[in-house]
Amino acid sequence: MFKADTIVMTALLALLTAFGPVATDMYVPSMPDIGRLLAADASTVQLTLSAYLVGFAVGQIIYGPISDNYGRKPVLLTALALFCAASLACAAAPNIEALIAARALQALGGSGAIVLARAIVRDLYTGERVGRELSRMGAIMSFAPVLAPLVGGIVQAWLGWRANFIIIVAVGMTTMAVTWRSLPETLRRRPLVPIAIVGAVRSSGTIAGNRVFRANLGIAALSYAGLFAWISGSPFVLQNLYGLSAFEFSVAFAIACTGSLISAAIAASLVMRIGMDRVIGLGTFALAVGGLAMIASLAFELAPVASFVVAMALYNAGLMFAMPQAIACAMMPFPDRAGAASSLIGFVQQICAALLGAFVGHMLGQSAWPLAGTLAATGCLALAVWAGSRNLRSGGTDDTKMRPVGVQISPLGGEVRPPDAHSGQSGYCSAAERARNFGDAPCGDAAA
Image 1 (spheres, rainbow, N blue to C red):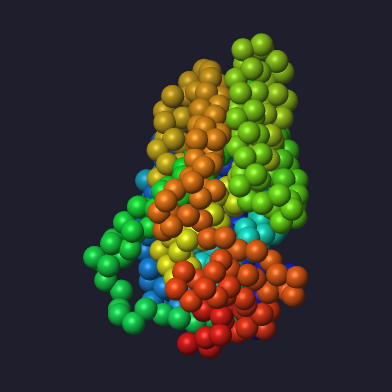
Image 2 (image 1 turned 90 degrees about the horizontal axis):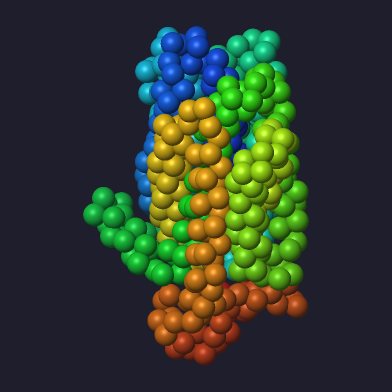
């Protein structure tokens, strides 16, 4: 079994979080061809992406609370099985309507992978180590949006769009086998009462009522929605308007993703040096600059493909600085409800992305302005949310429940939590004790 703080565990969790990019980015170069072969216009083909995001959103809400009660591993294996079956249905879809439905089911399965990967991180780590681990996962995962469209473009050119989904099935089955053999159960403390819909809704309401959570969620949702505006609009802008082939588009798409690859590699160490909030600030600034650069490229009639790719690379760099840290900050106040918090974050992200992607797909015609304007808006709004909520996130509220959890790294290798309000004890956790308790159980308590 894989253990915490090992590269193989981080790699497996990164692979699980890469299911979304792989399932989407591999077939993006094929979207115009899918429309031609299945007799569907651009806005209808774009619904295969929106349906995926809606299915992903529903899955985000379902998996977290269920895994909080029944464990991470069995729920994860069930989700992976559904993902593989739905991916096979995508490959066999006879028409666009069947493909849209199969994509929704594919997302319902794939969403479990990313929700449970985040929850497992929260099971194993605390404090800024959560942000560091998510950044490490992001550094590994960031290869997926670079490689997936390249592979998808090559497969599209040689074998057609259906072969991409066959490859996705193979990746899913391999991941399921590794998970079954090597992933331990990380949930050690489970609720004493069975899951109930009313209780899950009430729990989500409690989480959403936290102002720190909402501020960080806003940053994560805006940055992610901008990404999917690019994913849904760029195939038609770069191929139909600017004349790129499917393979040329996949190369341009991959180059734009190198920004996330570089920033994810930097963020893992940067967050431990300057803190998560400043990394989020750098990220939101890059998001805004990238979106505005795309506006400038159209306004000044710069080389369209090159300027779009450079602007999106900058946006993607900001995304990998801002989003993992914002998610980590949003989850930190809820160590006992990490699954529910992760589910709520994912639900809001996917719904925002689905709505914005559908909007861009509907507005695109013979102009790239809807795509550029959307990216500029999401980037600037994310920066505004960060700037407007700094006092709140740094503890500028009298309500202690609204403050982020403060954790410092001890020179002895453990973590020092803030003093307990009742006992006055610092809550020092040794490395061995933390490993035994999987990061969540109070120091000195044995794991359940």
